[in-house]
Length: 124
Image (cartoon, rainbow, N blue to C red; front, side, top):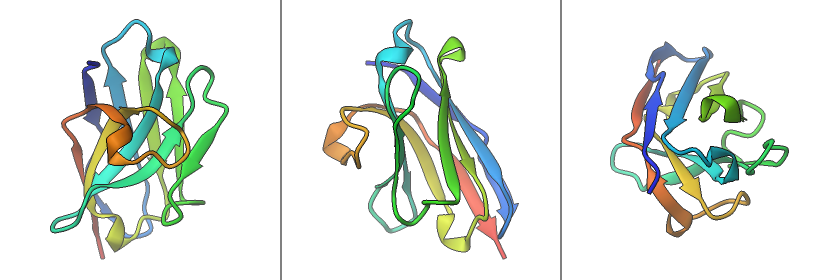
């Protein structure tokens, strides 16, 4: 199990930007495929974005965030990021970082470790 700690959530106006960070407590961080998921009140947790292990040359996004969100990683800092731009009201959710088995649209069953989540609230 890898311990993951998210940060960077908060309140932002629609159209604004926010960057989430997820710090991992493992010496082998570069070997993990990393993902972001989110869960809105009353809804199921859903996939947002994933990035391949190593240099992170392969990324994958949910259609709902494609072109607005960017996932990246810094292996020297054991950290994965989610840059969110052009935020919409429907992006309001608790965002979770996770280790995943695959970069191509991982399901909840593909998750190894979860972070505790960070709340993102988009206001009008």
